[in-house]
Image 1 (tube, one colour):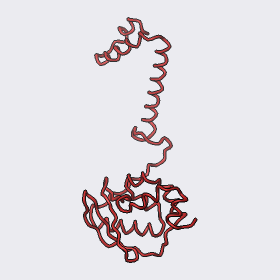
Image 2 (cartoon, helix red, strand yellow):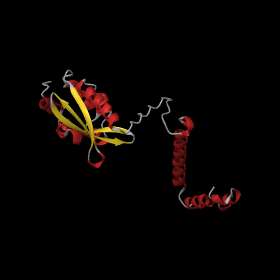
Image 3 (tube, one colour):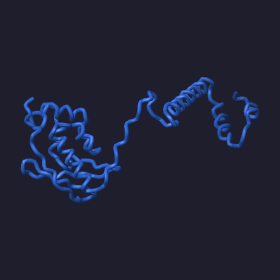
Image 4 (cartoon, helix red, strand yellow):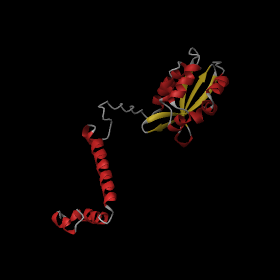
Length: 198
């Protein structure tokens, strides 16, 4: 195939000139190396074709035919919408619906602790669910932050939220810096520090 006459027979449009130049450069390589490169090219081509054909429309996706998860709906970018979302989050937190709470965390907060570990720790050391939370206001904060104001048994708190890609997300580190150290602690230290005794 590396004979000089091969390209005369297979000569095609001018767009093939780059391929012809590459092929001629490869012809100087020893036969075992050319075979190895050809096998690699076939594997690569097969993988690309398989990925393109594995889901509808030629888009990459799971080949199992499983439905893709629906994208989270966009939140209206209003104080009223955030107040509703924050009330739900605070209620979920008090009622130990931990996966729902974690779902509203921003990326840096999720980097502190995985969802599985977060849920496990709160399962082992649950909140007291009958403590009322009064989420009463939203104000603008610095740097695009949205501040949510609430109280638990008369003590006031402020949570930091941001609007990212159409959703309000909770910033754990700015809202509750002491929780960051708790979540980074060992399970035994976490249980000791929160006083759950298990």
